[in-house]
Image 1: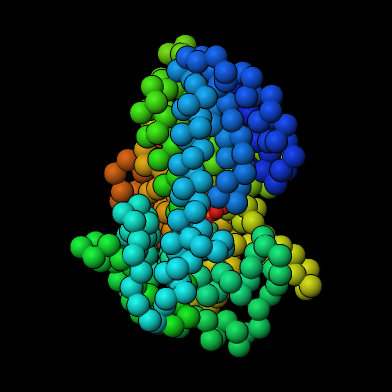
Image 2: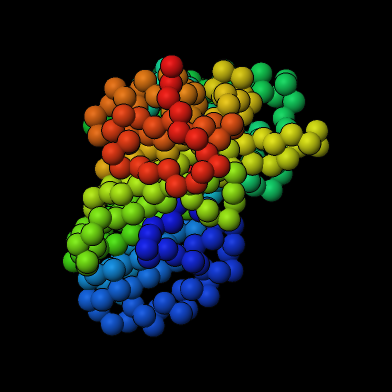
Length: 356
Ligand code: ADP
Ligand code: MG
């Protein structure tokens, strides 16, 4: 998990530790039974540890609705599971358009927007290359150059056809695969926030595997404080804290999120260079985006990472209501001009640096 929220940090949301959340669910079901006060729930959804912590206005009903929506999103947008809308779109590539509900078309449309904005550095049709690597899944491996060469021509976001009138998505070439993994969790965080507010929740922290959104006003009236993960430390340590209004989201993409060590001893992480088919190597270890829309922050954090420091920072600076924190492998931290007001570096083993 990437971010901890202070002072109410969530000790049980340890990424990659599936046992802890199960204990937490049992313990917290009791805490949530009394309506109106605090309530928590943690579960594995969307391939990660998802937790919702309500500080004010909590109820079992609100948590049930939040997790039901998460499961719905997983059941339509996962590319790894069978029977999802995305897997049906992929199975029909080169053959026919597939009926897709409005939310799938919306998220796919957002992904195509970030693809265009980055001229393909972000590309949701990266699926055939992702599948070769299988990073974080059984069968992860370094593909052969021939396999990569064969898959790359299928990475072509410009070919995707979203037809809102017909309610369909079409991948025109056989073998194309849509992968919304870089953006679906952000959409899910926005949706959980919407569902909680509709269930009269007044203050909550949503943490979907480190994709964090804070909702409403804290009961004590103070601002929300969200930690930004130390990319060199898998124990959930943070390098600093962002102080934020309700409705804000903090989303990080980094090399530590999912990676494996190949037979050659090298680390291979999960953000892929759409030109080469290999993991992006540009000196960055993580990019955090602070914004109000989590679907945009998730799409952007991956986009900025893929673009690299100079181009990524220029894009972040050009966008309204978007702030970014870039960390490179030499522990230098670069923040966008607006982030200087909200993010405070707290770890002296990192240095804040400026772009020339
Ligand atoms: P996380 O899932 O850890 O939050 P990201 O949001 O950065 O991380 O998404 C990474 C995922 O996006 C990968 O696991 C893969 O499914 C997909 N992906 C990898 N490279 C790209 C890319 N260049 N453009 C779009 N999606 C990508
Ligand atoms: Mg992302």
